[in-house]
Length: 142
Image (spheres, rainbow, N blue to C red):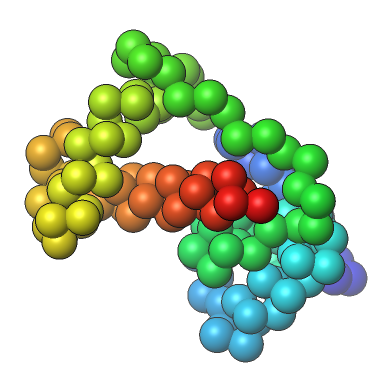
């Protein structure tokens, strides 16, 4: 990475000076998942592949790739609506009731876009939440 500057972006993530819209090949995504499962930090993977940490996290979540003996506890799910400010934008946490509705609609076979509309969320948010819930379920089985 000669000549690449390292800065923090608006989200507090490392920016390598390369475009955050960089596309990864299937082989690179597979390599990211493999390295993550061998214990590589998401920050190190983002630097190695010249992408944002959130992109690495998304692909790892999508593929179910976690570091061995993950030291990151999943945050508890609130009963009442909660939100926090992240990079100048409000982020709403999913509630237990929303999770139950989301899972019920998913079991019925409803498309993610329909679920998103019912929950007043984006389809990407719904897709991500379904993956997080699957990860929680998998961890509970261990």
